[in-house]
Image 1 (tube, rainbow, N blue to C red):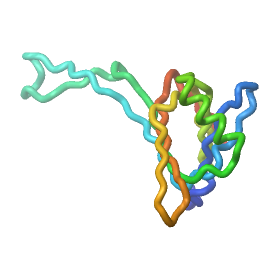
Image 2: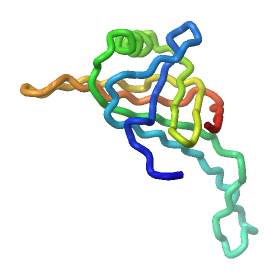
Image 3: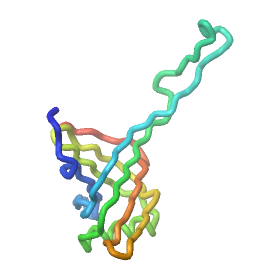
Image 4: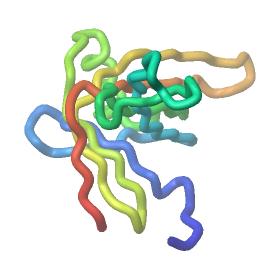
Length: 136
């Protein structure tokens, strides 16, 4: 895969009707996949080296981003989803790679502003079920 522009990584949320709208104003985005390990070491482990149990740990994805609110529809939807504490379908579009989709919950939503600057926001999402990947 050749180098990609960061602005082409898109974060989309289901608007409640099955249509996905792009979260506007994001300047940075980070998608992380994690897997917990399960230690299966016992007294008979060779050289007492740690042994891990394959496929046993919980997997999860985290998404973080920050930017400026600039689209009334996505701004209102993000706020409502957070305050309602609901889990919604989201999509993360990685250009020339694929689309990761699944249920996520907003785990944090922060606003900040400098006296001589714009109001910005930080958002963090945690996966709430299995994720699907479709190559593009």
